Image (cartoon, rainbow, N blue to C red; front, side):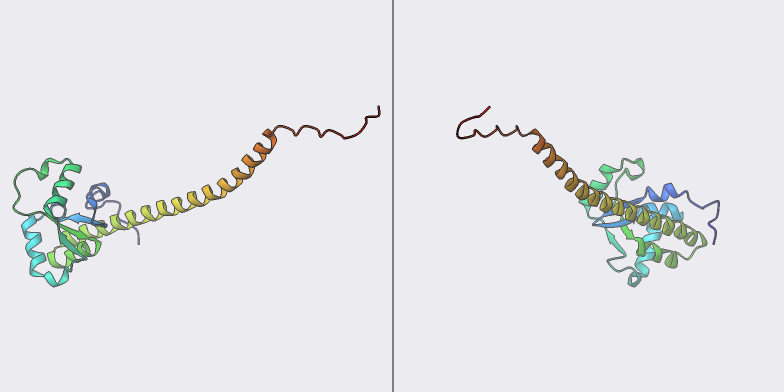
Length: 172
């Protein structure tokens, strides 16, 4: 199936909203609400009404320290002002579940784009891991080869052994 030439949200906008928290790639409820074009409280209410669909590995609430740290890393004016609660973080599975609880055509379309972004990110990471493994193998291989070269150079650099003196008389 061919991907539509015109997507509902540019992939860069989605990819820029995927963070690494607690060892998981996640998207924040505040960012998701903007993408779905709903108020953050509406998104969280829908999730809370369907809490059984969002176990801990699908969604978690940020601690105040995590939120402050993230805020300091990502300078954005949209996070200004006072907040009563820290945002929620949704894993890829949690984001996939959101379209079923929001029940809108936009939610489905946005989720398709988000899932594509997660897949692209997974492919990029796999490619980087593969390159890192190959580089490590090359380093090991060439380290061994260079050791032989260096050993040979060291042998060439040794001063020649002085000729041994012959015992006895020389006959010229």
